[in-house]
Length: 177
Ligand SMILES: Nc1ncnc2c1ncn2[C@@H]1O[C@H](COP(=O)(O)OP(=O)(O)OP(=O)(O)O)[C@@H](O)[C@H]1O
Image (cartoon, rainbow, N blue to C red; front, side, top):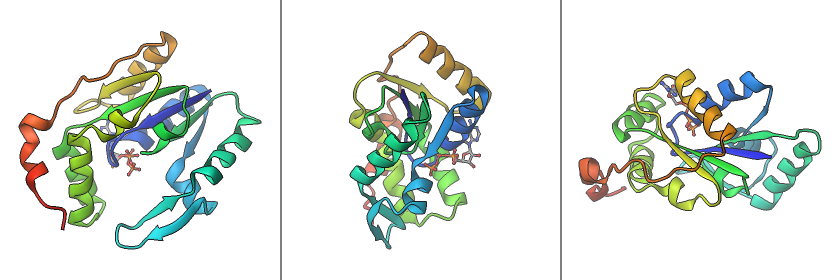
């Protein structure tokens, strides 16, 4: 079984995945790390400091792990595209994401691109199948993980719980230079 923990960069996927994985001894695959370490990409986008993922190689990499692991957590902002059985979409107030990504030293263009993706529900819109959306704004990780466990146990589905467009529309009018 593949559980995808997806959402805009900076929303808290890795933090949540680690706690969830540790609680149940479930293997967590950090997609970004795996792509870099095992060269599961076709090229590197120097300007955006990101990799163009080779999804066929990545799928084969995951399949190999699945030979040994019944349940895996796919941690990454493209995990919802990796044929998950259940997708947890984490959401967070764009201002908080902005602070986190700036603290990480992301270039303004990359910060704005990710804020706009959060406002436009990109990960949620791309997700298919069983989806459970959680607003993590202002919540501690244990609380978020408890809700995820509850959702998985009861096969809960939920989406469309946040709408950042009204309050943060101005970010959408800014140009990504
Ligand atoms: N629930 C939370 N409360 C407070 N801080 C959090 C919470 N979740 C994550 N953070 C903090 O936010 C930052 C980003 O978290 P994390 O790296 O887990 O995000 P991510 O979605 O995995 O990002 P990326 O996709 O870029 O790897 C970290 O500094 C982390 O400590």
